[in-house]
Image (cartoon, rainbow over all chains, first blue to last red):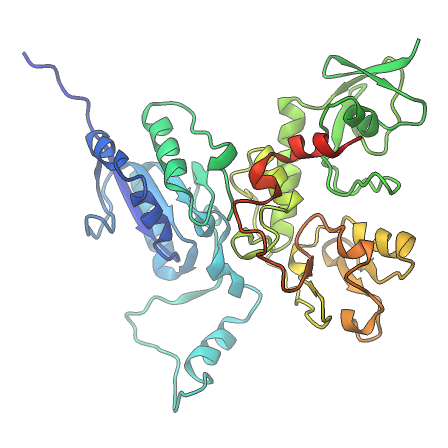
Length: 183
Length: 234
């Protein structure tokens, strides 16, 4: 009888109010990707183009929460992922999108869609398919419980690799020295 | 026999009048601080130097060393409390490291690394604090102020100009510029003042040199703040 191969961990990823820079950094683990695919399989992710998240072991969230759809997706991830990780400065602190938080949302929208130089008869988009923006951008831990945080803009490939391998091996993930950066 | 106290079980000699923090650093033991400066009287506002002496929490920068006392500093409990203080400082202002030109030279950020702060944990305040770019040589970004009053003290006690002050109470507390207009350009502030070089975070920034040293090669990119501080202390 052949030995049973250990079950691969199921991993989902998504980018909320992010720039996909953290996903790019994830790909920066380079040849470790070959090791990683022996250990995990992807569920919902920009890498698979699966649109809905199913039951997973690990969820990686890039980006903060800036609109109603982000809240919906984030809660869906929390329901389905045993371990939820905030990946990168925006997910951890709100980041760049949160720099609008001291401004009024309607002023922001008017500035961009009505008063920007070169715009004539501009109006704020109101298609019902567009998710409604929140008045402020929030780090994800202000919306759901988050198990781990990987800071950095973006976190380096080695930091993401160290964190995931710690987690997959059952160690408490730890980032120190060069691997811990907020910028 | 010379006087000494025990810091985390290690004997630390001291001279009468020295604080716990001064004696510890002189003996090569790191106790963190943000608002403390060797040339000024202790301020005791950042509380990062909190230690446990005789079972009580005290600020090491303001507490005189006592012969034979036992002090706990570098313990999981005290370092955990320091991490909590750092988290509160981070959510109270707008500390957005990725866009800050002080990143890598910032003591608040370096202490976040030192105590392995991975998340600000608390709810962010996202306060509204407009910047003051009026001065030809220096930019003021109040978003990052931690109210250590080092610029206030340096400007008043060394530069003799009293350019800065804190005003308001509690959540309303903020740094102001001593001019009728409230603008730095309308004071006699100069980029050569001590107050222009003393900010531990990224509030007082010199213009046109922001990225002369690239990110990744800066003070706390090279070594931790504990190592840097002990290297610099007498």
